[in-house]
Length: 184
Image (cartoon, rainbow, N blue to C red):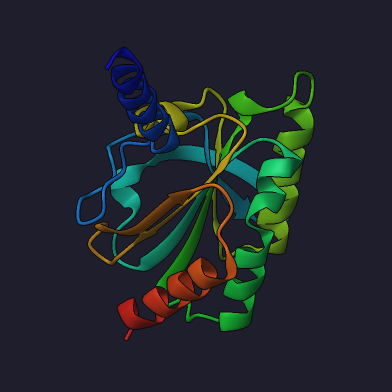
């Protein structure tokens, strides 16, 4: 009997850690703002920053990629990024938002993470890129460290899909199909 209780407790704890985030389908994202650095802006070739808030995630269907400031986290969902490029969604109805947790970078690489975000903004000027120096988003959304979270929100900012970790081929197709449905 004691072993059964221990097994039940272990299973419950594993389930809790596996789904640690507090993002729920059918609800708005937990409210958060990033004041340092925030959303990257572009004026010519000059990159600046402005305060960003999750309240801004309305008006368009979006795929949000919240990633640790590590190349391994960026690569985790690189196949999804390629699928988004191939889908060629209209900028009028769709927006990619990438939130980079600079606080979850390998020690000493914060400057590299910042310059990489700036280079990405120059290359993908239409994308929304948020550099979160203190990890405010990861804290508010209870995201795991050294990871990548993918969230799809509709035009009202309601979550329609969420997963932490690498998406498989079926999930990538599900995300792309969902966005196509949301922008029609």
